[in-house]
Image (cartoon, rainbow, N blue to C red; front, top):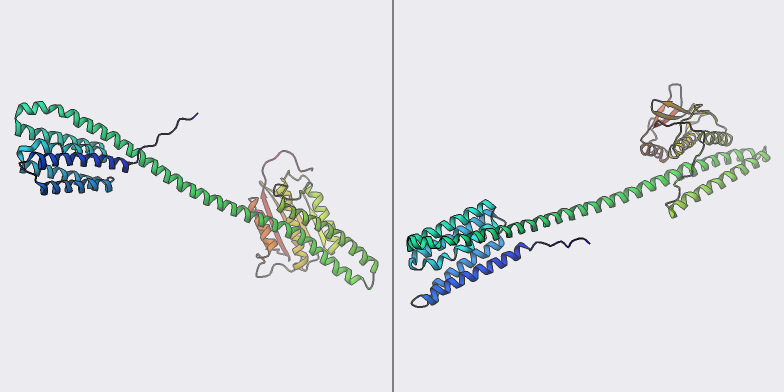
Length: 406
């Protein structure tokens, strides 16, 4: 069982106790001298001295963390004692009692060496006064007062150490509170970033999958519409093929929407065998659009992660979709090539090329650029020297054993 932590006493509470004791001591001295010991009560000096001390001691409460002000307060207190000793030399022992609170306060509220200097100086001052007033014998007898001054110094140092511990804990708490607030801000930022990234990912998947399928469906509808007057049987076949593709797209859309309800399920449909997936894409897209597609893959494709295989498949989808929609091309080339510690896919065509205002703002192209950043790769678009456009998607290739035969 962990030990219970003992909290330091609040320095302000200690100040109240010390000031109260000191004011009580000062009150007894004033009463003894000005009220009971004098030939007659002398109320005015008693009130003035007590008020002056009261103000000085109250200032300690408000300025206890300012050494310069504390030294001025102690100096003012000592000055009042000197004046009282000079005005009432026959009653010096009464006023010397007021030195003890100053000795205690100096060790509590000043640095160690500053407090030692004050205690030592006050002790020497009191002994000199006693020697001058009462002679050497009384001076020797009063040397035992060093024990009282030493006790004040020791107790004051302990209280000061407690005050330092209190302020240290207070500062640590403030730092902890600040760190907690920063952590809450960071946590909120991470949550917002995670939500933003998830929204972008879902948007990319819906665009790349559903957008591609709808584009192909539109092309097929246009072809079927042209064939209805002359070859209705072939048009019916195209429509039947399109219906099946739309069903598949609807199923993929349902999978994507289910991820919103079950975020811990697999994030994306896997592309287990990239060469077969690309070959199927080439076949279906070519058949649906009439575009001639040349697929060029290395004989030994390195082992890729699920995210990398899916990224390449989406690049091919988006690239071919853009060729069909914007390039006015008759042929397209999909190629995967290996480089130094990199693997790249290019999708090019023999169409009209990129316009002067590059279509960087299109959602699908932005999605490919985002995929590249997530996978620490690059994405670029250029015009081919012999006509047409080309997009290039590269990813770093980590050294792996084996090839992608899956």
